[in-house]
Length: 106
Image 1: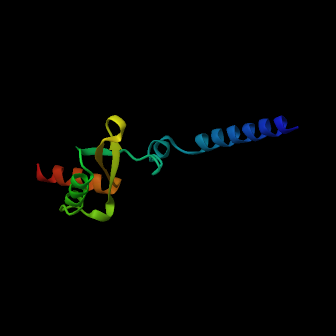
Image 2: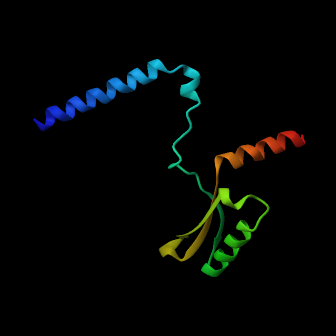
Image 3: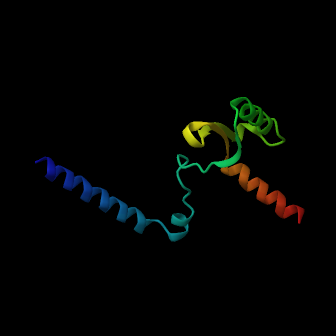
């Protein structure tokens, strides 16, 4: 009985997906953005001491950019977690603004 219910729910989900993809025009399908859960982090620096990593994090956050759209974190890396890595993520809206500013400057 439980297997039958699982199969029925899978079939319903598949049908709803196909209906959604058929009802939306291609331009709307292409414009869908990835989930905000999937962040791509950029490595800014690797340090031997945690204090150095914290100082670099503070330096990045005190920069000229809007800090409310930045996220900076410190993670352990290296052999046996002996080093500290500073990682940076910028919000998509901030990235688009940077591209526009570069285009206007040219």
